[in-house]
Length: 502
Image (tube, rainbow, N blue to C red; front, side, top):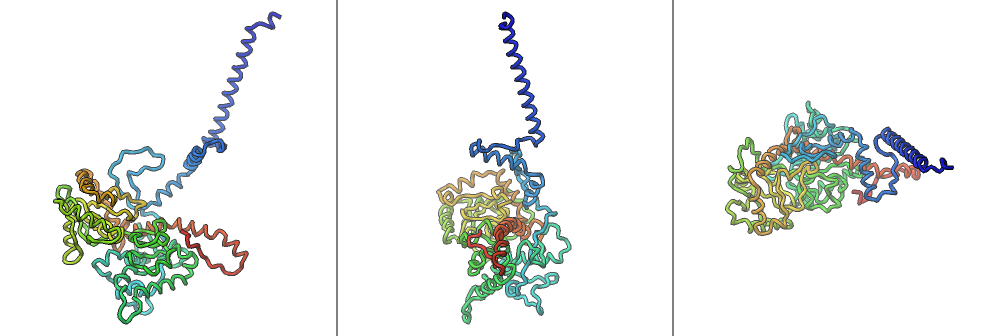
């Protein structure tokens, strides 16, 4: 009895049991740890019902990030036409900001496949007084290129350069770096291009002659709508994969309401309702600058005596009221040039001299949010000061304008002394950094024939290409029940999309 009740034996027995339990637990935990490691380093099954909503979303997001393979990441990066050397990738540690330089687009990328309608010459080069031979539709641009009218007409000539580029893609020896190539089979195309010189049509033929009831511009738009809506390509997609250039704010005024599903290439959205044109489906293209490029620019902060420059129309409607307000605020500033001006009477030469001798150039909203003045400033390496709250900028999904432009809200700009104090606070080093950046990006706004890698023509095609996946997804989703409808009704189904499709 004495041995059975020995307290020392009870203590020893409890210690043995505790030790056994501890060892067993450690072995169990280690076994579970190795199971998790073999399954990929994290639990595959999580009871998300036990997590708060915020933690659930964070867990799912982390799981999705981890599960992306390297090919997907490379594909998403390669789809950007400009890579910023100073930009951080997801998961990368923050880096100190340095001067950001542009990498040009990858020459090995796949070119956008474009089907172009063979519209009659009256819609395109016929507007330039080019005469077709026989049944020909297009000029032989290998022998002679029809001239586009100069002056302010040139600033909206985007349609001309894009069409020339597509025509040349069929015989160009070197296609490296080309953003788009013409294909003859529409079923192979990524987009359908409509070669209507709409800006030229407006500039030249929008007035009604005495013997006419309608202007030639209006008649061409009516013909275009009839032609496009009768084409199988339009019926197949409802026009969503069509590309129409309407760069002049007043071009396509009549047809735009009927062709709204198409992708428009525009200067801005100032005269468009958002259900007709918006940044999600359309592309903003730069103006062709009127001022010549500043070649071999060796100027600097100290050699540009004018601090702030503006020359143009001062009294404008709509958002352009700010020009008048700024004129009265700045007219007595000694190192500011703010005056009325136009392209007439040597205006281009004077503006060229003024911008090249100025540190900052004002780009103020006028009748529309954008103007050619921004692109003249870029060509002059004069740091743009943008005062236009509704402005949309070309390629902004891949290009950071804050690296070479100053943005000021309209409400701040019209406060007394605000603008001048802000501009004077920008020192020589910061200005020089922006000036260098302007010289790096200026090629992105150059319209050329033949086009070159990284110029405005190729950049616009790349902007169009970045819209293609969204177009395809929406078209595919719209066809989900087409097969079922076909069984229910054996008749041919006309493909239609709702008015609020976008």
